[in-house]
Length: 225
Image (cartoon, rainbow, N blue to C red):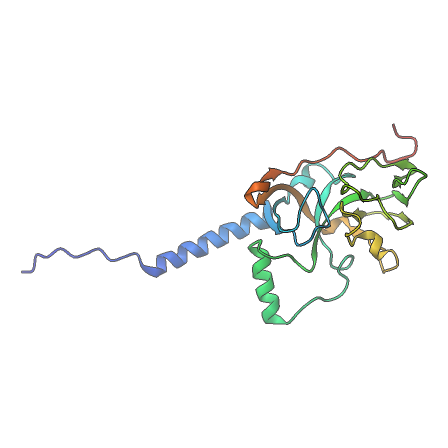
């Protein structure tokens, strides 16, 4: 009789594959309900967010407290900022989607900007001091990129119900609501398209930091404090 002990079988690739599937499933659930990771592809939100940053985005913050003026929001720009089909074909679209899901590349349809106008607001550029006004009150905007003016483009925008007026902090390089004043929808983003609020820069490590939520940038009426 052969008394040689049998060597235990290795767990094998099946276990590793199942573990990977479980990890992906859990990650997908978390990212669809609570938190997601986005890649910042441009400098339009400097200095708060820089090109190449990976940010953690909370999908639940605005469920607890509504969007307010001064908030940075991540949103789906289809129908407002990205009105045209930006597809590149099934294969390239799949590769791009995988890179976006991993937080390695940006998206053609997902944007990050700052809320300047809320539903019912009138946003104007600019007053005698060169500042944006909302409902006749000048905005104090400490987040604007150093050396930039609040806007070099003169405009008046009335924000309809259920929409937001959004600008980048690096005003001189940002394509935002100002760029779409003459387009259908006028650059106004539906509040239903807001995905969430950036809460943390997670990469690169030397920029690892919380993204604080600012106080409202201005009162909502001319008679406000």
